[in-house]
Length: 65
Image 1 (cartoon, rainbow, N blue to C red):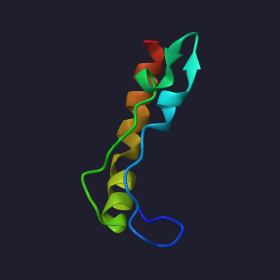
Image 2 (image 1 turned 30 degrees about the vertical axis):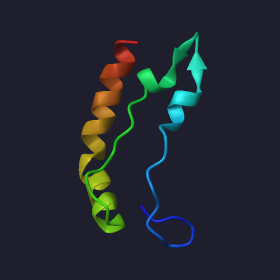
Image 3 (image 1 turned 120 degrees about the vertical axis):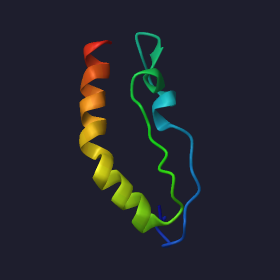
Image 4 (image 1 turned 90 degrees about the vertical axis):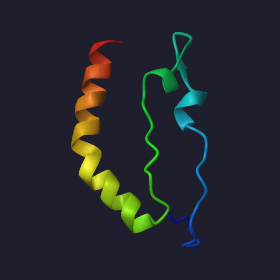
């Protein structure tokens, strides 16, 4: 995705790894996704296409944790 300067940004660390609830890393519960594209338009399209299934997956993860 593009950064605030409209340049292609580099992938960062999973921000959920920095938070814990009851000594459990949120990175173990909250899934992060790494779209298989480098172009921002393709990344946004990938997110738009997959968001409904990711929400359903998050609901299942929540039910199990």
